[in-house]
Every structure is written in C-alpha cells, then in structure tokens.
Amino acid sequence: MTRKFNFSAGPAMLPTAVMQRAQQEMLDWNDSGMSVMEMSHRGKEYMSIATKAEQDLREVMSIPDHYKVLFLQGGASAQFAMIPLNLLGDKQSADYLNTGMWSKKAIAEAKRYCNVNIVADTSGDGFTTVPAQSSLQLNPDAAYVHYTPNETIGGVEFDYIPETGDVPLIADMSSTILSRPIDVSKFGLIYAGSQKNIGPAGLAIVIIREDLLGKASDNTPAMFNYETHANNGSMYNTPATYSWYMAGLVFEWIKQQGGLEAMAEINKRKADKIYTVIDGSDFYGSPVAKNGRSWMNIPFTLADSDLDADFLAGAAAGGLITLKGHRSVGGMRASIYNAMPEAGVDALVAYMQAFESKQK
Ligand SMILES: *Cc1c(COP(=O)(O)O)cnc(C)c1O
Image (cartoon, rainbow, N blue to C red):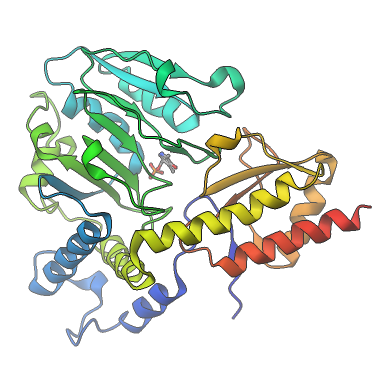
C-alpha cells in the first residue's frame, strides 16, 4: 500500500492517524460490539461520540457559550438557502461580498429570498484580490453581511475580518475553518462543509449566535430551520452519524497537534514554501494579489501553459496527485489543508524545482 500526496480541493486528505483509528474501531467501537455506522443515533454509545465531538470542537475553536454548534446535512450549499430563510426576519435585504465562485453561488441562492446588495465585487480583476474594508458599501438596514473568507477555487483569502457594526457577519469558512485560530465572537454565523478541513463529506457545521435563532419565516421547512436543529441537538432526524464521528476524531487529532495555534504555524510554513518557489522564478506565477494569498488553496500557473500536461503527468508519476487547476482558473492548484503532511509540500516543492531545471 502506498498513500499518495493528494492535493484535491475536496473531498481532501484526512490525517492518516485518524483513519487508522477509525479502521481499528471499524467493526467494534469501544467494546460495544457494533460499528459506529450501525449504531442508533439515540443510543448512549453514539450520544457519547456526538457530545464529545461537539465539546472538542468548542474547545479547539474557543466557541463562546452563547453560540450553538449544529451538525447538519446538505453541505455548505444548503446553507446558501438556509441563511436567508433563517436570518432575514422582517428585513428585505442582505449584503454580500462577491469575491469568487463560491460567493457567486451564495448570492444566486439568496436572490430567491431577498434583495441582495453587492457591497464589494472583485470580478473585474478576475477574483484575484481582497476588497479593502474601506471599499465596502455596507448597508445599515441589511439583515446580515455574507462573505467567503477563503475562496477555494480562486485561492483568495481575506487578511482581515470585515467590520460590520451591529449587522451580523456571516462567513462561509468551508475551506479555512480550523486552519488557524479565529475569534468566533466577531461572527453571527460561521458555516463549513466538512470535506475540506473537517472530515469526510456529508456534513456541514454551523456555529450560530443564539440571538439569531427563531427568526425563520413560517413557511421555512422544518429541516431548513436552524431552530429545529438547535432544539434537538442536531438530531431532529438521523444525522450523518459516521461523518460526525470522523469529524470528532479529527478534532481530537487537532488537539493532539497542539490546537489551532500549532496548526496555523504549520499551515503558514507549508504555504510559504510553495509561494517562495512561485515567486522565486519567472517559470511559475500566481494570479493572486500578495495580501490575498490563501494558506489552503494555492493556484499557480506555468509561464508556458503548453507544459501543464507534462507537469501534471510527472507529478502524478511521483505520487503528487490532483494538482490540476479548476477549469475556471486553469493551471495548477495545490490544496494543502491541515491533513496534508509537510512532507507532501516538500515533495511538491522539490518536484517544481526539478521540473523547472529540466526545461532549461
Ligand atoms: C466546497 C465549498 C462549498 C460547497 O460545499 P458543499 O459541501 O459541496 O456544498 C461552498 N463554499 C466553499 C467556500 C467551498 O469551498
């Protein structure tokens, strides 16, 4: 068995130690005689798994007590609708920052429910920059402000948290959650699909300030109402039990690594190694403005795009897979979430340098 370094944007690599633990527990969890997959979600065994996962996430992210943590299905994409359904209340409009493909999708969905004010738009530069706080045209009557701190496809990451006064700030953290410490108290709601930096697909985590619950319109489906899930410990219906369990193992693993401070240090170092190669030669390029460069998703181009296919084939032959860029950006993209070992980044860097030398 050889495990490759998989640079996929999601589903993405999981920590090997986590999967080995799951493998050990696969047929018989903790002498229960059952696999986690076979457990009733209301049984005491599964309840202990679910509770511990939430506690560990709260500890790792220092989530204040007046926030609920929900473990939902439908991925991050279901949140694009749940957010306006639940948070508009008696307001007619919401503010959205348009900084890439994922914010565009969130905007398109919100338009079904309210007037969307685009308060920043970087489409003009091909989604390669972060709009400055001073450029945001915020609307004091907005129900909330929505943004995407890390645009997974463009590789653009905010280097600040927007200041929105009394208007709740909502963040799609799908590809940046758990990559470093964040101050949860600055947000009304944080959400993330699981398959990037949390665990396997099938789950979305929502962290919501309690005063934002209870504002859903009457025709909101029960399954799309945060209050339903908050009042039922995310067990109104059967949750994605195995994904939740795996997420819990990842939270434990993060604690063992030294928590988010330690993850941030490693992640910054990993990203810097790749950007150093990109910036160190004319052979490689980054489309993204320097202050907006993501630690998690690093798009890069070759000066001669005719070499892309060769680059990718050679990388794959060396065990570095899924480096092809998103079709909308082209070139390459290295997604290096928490579970990508530093050795994987070192191998990519060595390959990039060798590939460049070979062309000369
Ligand atoms: C992947 C991703 C999504 C979509 O997630 P799903 O779980 O597939 O719905 C949304 N937003 C961002 C920023 C993403 O990276």
